[in-house]
Image (cartoon, rainbow, N blue to C red):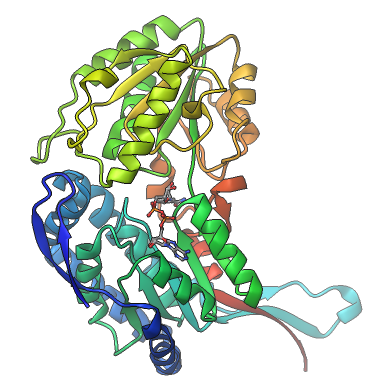
Length: 459
Ligand code: NAD
């Protein structure tokens, strides 16, 4: 079925796309399984040559690709280039380098009572894998796990978000680089996603909300299908007594407002030691006042992507204000325009942990700031939500910073920076608690897409 796609900020038509539906699912997997037999028979060197061609092609068309991503999401083109295209190119390069190492015979020690025998772990593809991706980074959150899975010898069915279908169409162009049906992109809604999930893929890699992640996990449990789940976050940023306040303020503004806060690793809560609280607050307000919202390449912050998310963000702010929070920066609710997808960045103080803004994922350009008496209090508060995706710590004492990082119950931590650990493709990535299960990225990410067989050999 052919449907129309719109730019979220302007409402203008940006193209048409071909959507699939649940009745297409059996055929999709049949073709995928057939293609996987051929694909897995190719040498790793040959498979990597396809991935390299994909990387070169993406580099050649990066301007056009970034324009499509920007028009589909409301992010600026510069953000599309850096966060989506460059991140993908970097990850592809890492896959090209590390895939042969992941697939090499992984020799292990053999104890004395098994003298004369040898042992190793053999990694092989899982088969036909399903990858489901969200709208906030519609390109890189699709293509990076796809490339990891393909390198390991799997065929892939990728279902991108229905909110960014033109990026789905763009991904189809890259899928055509591979032999037929090895990499299929199928565009559709949640009902279609559910049908793909229940139709026995050999593995599911899901990136999205906690609620949908749990339903994917339930469906997978029925068939004992293994999964990786990359879900939401409520990331804390801690400003210690000895922090460089200017750096911390710049980090907080970037972390909270970049891509209008629509990042799973966005800074969603800030805990500031009372000794530096006043200085930090005035610096974040000054930095925030300098931000410019818009669609042009010089803009710092783009628009929100979906109306649904915009409503959630407004509800969280309203709830906080009703419970006594103070709006230090940004527009008061009475000036909000229901039709405007550009939500001005907001800083809230006097926030408490009974407010949604301190407990639930907001996913918008809001920075709630809380004064704390000690770093111990900050750590305790940071660990109180059900999420555990990322966190940031600002301190000049790196020994203390690393000790605090060890105490944060999260899958990722940045010390004196925000969100950067994910752009190092050599680091594994993933959350704990409600933020997910398993690892993506790095060698661990590729290993997720493999069956591991332990082999013992007697001569
Ligand atoms: P979402 O869960 O609503 O949708 C994600 C994908 O799942 C979409 O493709 C959607 O069509 C599909 N889907 C919906 N219902 C389904 C079902 N029943 N079965 C199978 N698939 C189904 O998430 P979203 O709104 O697109 O994305 C925002 C969320 O994603 C936020 O919570 C954000 O934190 C999270 N996210 C997490 C990461 C991470 O790496 N941890 C990265 C980006 C986004």
